[in-house]
Length: 161
Image (tube, rainbow, N blue to C red; front, top):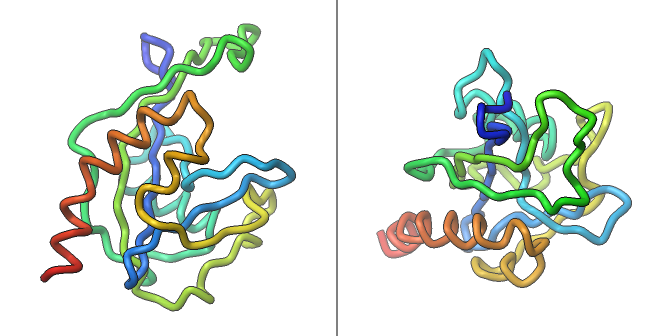
């Protein structure tokens, strides 16, 4: 779903474990690390898309997680000019995302990168809360910073509650 401004509707997933670490995944065949994310289909709500992407990308089912919160509004980033596919119609200039903060309720052995016919990731690890800002590609950094800042109070409340 690409809106009239050229942004593709998308969800981002920040998965938090009991120790307050975040799941950080490496794109298959690349040295690019990111949080799981994916497009929202026309017949899906952001929450439905999040659960579908969670299952496709990291093998987790709704019973494995609880939703701690989500961003209040869409967060947008523009793609670098070299990544814009001008031959595609409509042209997508970037993404607008709703970010979800989840807590892993299952075991970390429930995380599986091989459930999809076309896996997105080949490795994952747990990282400290703010570490992704140092590794994510530069054009996504602002969105990551905003999502992490907006959702951080929920992690703090969870660890002190």
